[in-house]
Length: 293
Image (cartoon, rainbow, N blue to C red):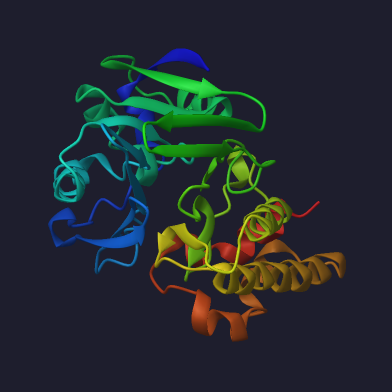
């Protein structure tokens, strides 16, 4: 791993809606067994889009995946402390967006080492607004690395560009748990960040990657929403394929992006997957269209 210095402002990624009331957020802890926990954040504002967090409890320290928005740090930290009073040694970012990395600075201040794929770092640097309050981070290149503490091992796996060009999927082999970041939602159409390398084909490939690493009892912590399993991941992948095929066909027939957005091509899927009032969910057909080659 290589060490870099990241300005704190870079951890914010995509900003939440200005009107979001963070005080209305609730954090629910799900025991996944073998020292693994999911912390699921919800807010009545459908535009909030708060990422899920995974906590792994070792013998003398913790590993955390995704640090949520900076404004939620105190609430998240209290949930983590209720799981275990041990210090967080590593905080892994599944990608650079602020709903998954916004709390980096606060975790680093408490001594955590921030870990991300090098492409996530590049995206953070590209979005820099101010150069002050630097924090250290470790990055990895290529498609895999490993982080361990006594009692827990995390396999960090980088897929080809999917949600972004810097996605990390974390496999916990000792617990049969997978933390996917935003390559997977449960439910809700995912955001496909075309501007940062994302594409619908990449999302499908990443979903297939997750499914290939699932056994019959695997628990999956998605980027947003409830803990799911292989069947849920398969249902999600099938939705992506259906959306891709319909919109690809429409594009091949000469339909414009605006026409596809208005054509209601995914009406049957919308009943389960579309979250009204959530910008990423509502933009899904456009993001699929833009990512098609």
